[in-house]
Image (tube, rainbow, N blue to C red):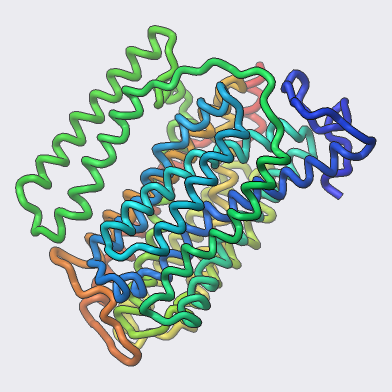
Length: 508
């Protein structure tokens, strides 16, 4: 068993000097308690990732239930990713200072209450606001997951714990679309989408009291700067980018949309200048520019942003296409995405061995497989027109999923191994932030390609109905997915050839 194997010299899995407040208790109790703690934090990871996949299937149901426009649907997806990513770095530093137990409890409570607000929303504006708060809650508690594993486990036990974290993420990715389809099938298109959010209440009701009882307290905090101005400039930069991409299309690209994009460039320049200045003064900026001097870190960050922009938005496209464009059910949409999720699960389980043995070639192979899968999806869409079969997409999506499992975790390993150990926490937070920001940007760009220059009807699909305008939009959107993924492939060349070489340089 994972939790009964030797973890540290104290037999408790505690990092030396970690300041764990709860004592060892009876022999064998620490290992059992650590196992229970791991289950609790994995439940949190499951919920956070589930809400990035289950919602895609519910988009047409949301459109029908509260008359949401395509722009509203884009905000439901990208708004969650946006606030999730923006909260990560600040939450990680607050956790270092005040302890990760309170951050986990606060974030999970906010997430659960926001899920209730999502399920009870009566308008697109209410749902979007609730999703923004839900993403904020996820971003507050998510850094506590890896930090808790880092504290409780060492050596092979830590690798197994992180492996279980990857498995939890993989399972949530696989279960999400299917669970969403089943819930909507059972509750109906009008209100089925509400249960996609309300299901979080059951997990939250069990996980919050368990976390309050089990998670260790932090005996002594570490002082880290929070960089409020940097966080504000980062949020402003992303909002000035996303808002015109989502709303500008529906409004016909008026002057204000171009002014926002120009303001985004100004805000980004201001953020860079501020972070450079703060770093030179010995502070801790939200984006540590000094880490970009590591070629692998810079390439891996850009790879993560572009790759997540390219693959996560594919499911937004398929959900709209399958239900609004072709009039299929939510359950059929969930089943359509299962081959991708299963392919990801299979390859992710062995990704650490592939990256250790083949180095950068494993990541390159994964991105090439993703490109081939997306290219095959595009080919099917062009050849089939409005007569697309789910079976024709099974192979391409499974191939893309197999590639996906070889990219995300190995890229994280390459990025973290390329920076000094003392900066690994900051680098890890920055990497997850890049992933979330990539997902948000991808939805905004792909939404423009999918819906064209004006809002096409959303939620208007009905059994047997075919909307060629959405079918053609899906072709354009998939082409944009390919462009993002191809750019990510170029960034992968910045990774070191082998992990061992980078780690040796780090430890020298």
